[in-house]
Length: 128
Image (cartoon, rainbow, N blue to C red; front, side):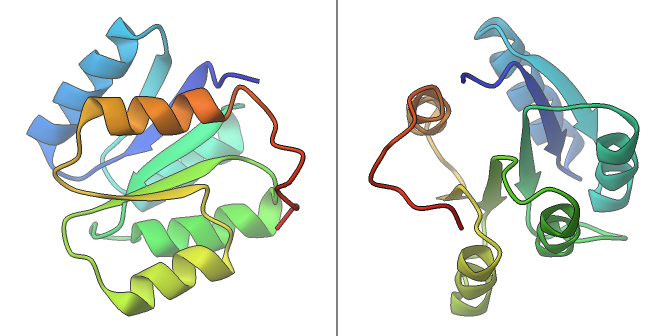
């Protein structure tokens, strides 16, 4: 199923606004959150089809958000974004079954490919 409502957590105002507008242009409803704590509150208050989150944010990191969301919903697609690739972050992303891990700056085509892949279930992929 193609995600329709995306919860997007990003502390950088300019990046949050730009990607929110881009995703809206692609046909998604985007709920923007300025950090992981706000994103978690939104996740608990409103149904979303996918979480897209920066990793390094104040108050609650994207990795903390991923761990918490996974405790409440194991199957919700969750994409992590980072400008600071680190093996520990990749390990945590894998442990908590992040759907994708994209390095900033990324191309919109890269993100779109990940989003499009969510529309077709892959019978060879096992549930995390």
